[in-house]
Length: 288
Image (cartoon, rainbow, N blue to C red):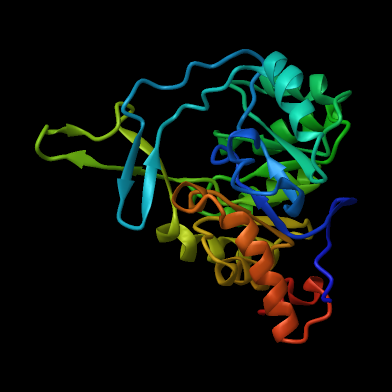
């Protein structure tokens, strides 16, 4: 049987498939559809130092081959997360990656410090303002006891500059892409489809952009990459891996196929067997 294990900054995952933050709750919501034991990791919804109510509704709308969301990182806060969600995830044989959100560097550091003594494997920092990326990374690393994944926004001129800034700040892993900023107008109501006016676009439509950015970043820095953006099938996931990603996150696909993550992991295994590839690591960045 082909080997599926991958390594992210010293953390070994049984396979390269994980969930994308904000599309899978904290695991409990999907546990009746997906055997969480079969995933490389579960990435939780963004967690802040205090509860966030999120944005006003409507905050989700469908687009051609994708969706726009302006949820506003609604979450119950770190206290509830530590009491309720971590104990639930610990029941499963999967790695726990906590997505951390904040409105300032101080907010991020507060949550990161609090998670230092919790039994979680990695932290993914959801940075919404890329200008200060290197500084935020440096500060977070001062408090982090687990490896730090910096999640990169694609809403920049040059994604490789962001990747280099995160690397310079001491990031252990990079994840990309976050959502692309988009807008939809309801012509009958003559207003915005989302109360927030703009939202983050995700889903199959963004995949070619995401694959291109993962390829660029893989060739610009030496950090492992978690690739995401429109992955719905094992073929999609393999594109990201061949472009240079060590692991992949499945997001929007969970909404139209709650079994997607498990199916993708099985599909990658089947591909390796069919192609007589002994180890998934042989395919990482194979396309130059």
